[in-house]
Amino acid sequence: MNYSLEPLKASALTNMEFGQLMNRHLSDLLKVDQALKTDQPYLDYVQQITDKMVLYERGLAQVQKNAETEKIKIADDIRDKAIDAFSKALKLYAVSDESEEVEASRVLGILFGTFKNLANLNYEAESIGIDKLVSDLDSEIYADKVNLLNIGRYVTRMKKSNEIFKTLFSGRIVTTALTESYDLKTIRDVTLKTYNEFTAYVLAMSNAHKTPLFTTSLALLNTARKYYADLLARRSTGKTPPAPPTA
Image (cartoon, rainbow, N blue to C red; front, top):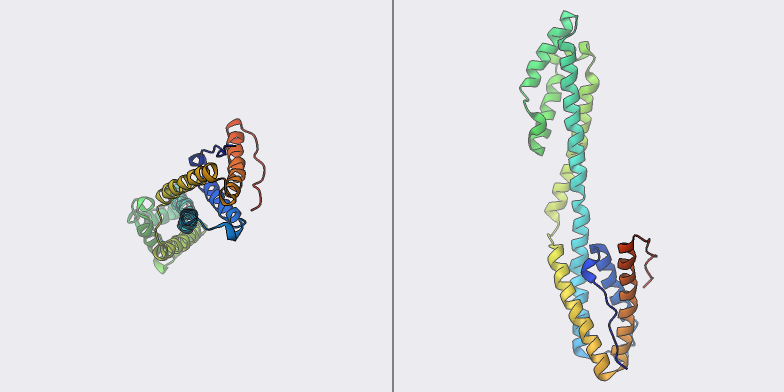
């Protein structure tokens, strides 16, 4: 009989799914009787995939950390809204029917005007700018005017949103500095190439020699490939895939 390899478009899998497939294969192949593993090319391929998966998993972790970028953007949007709220509060009192409130709004407006386009500055410049603005508003020169207009909560809002942003941004800077950079796409492409060579080799040797090492390995490879092939098929039809098999 001729053996065959279960069809699978591995390139269509998500990054996480591809990593799970490789790890499943490596786990399954450990179950092959160690005494059968005497073929050096076979052992070399398995070792190559094992080594590449170490880098691949680090690349996956890096991608997950990059998700923090979105959190930072959201935090920046929140503090931008806090700045806008303060600005609108000042403008409201600029048309007050109380001359004292109009004057307080004018004075605070002059201060605020020195921080022109604050929300459009780069991340760190905006952080410093908000710190300075809040510090000035809390000073003896301006604090009484802030209290008169009862807009202290807008000042507090700017301060708190800026502190939250700085904490997130600082953590990201440290993480980036201490983390090696991995090109996940390139690592995946190289791993997939080695994997395809390996499966082709196992298939060819199974048909050429029909020895237990290769036929058993092929059966294990096909079991996992069938699951992920079915997963892709269900995805294309909109059906919910089953839970992945345990290794």
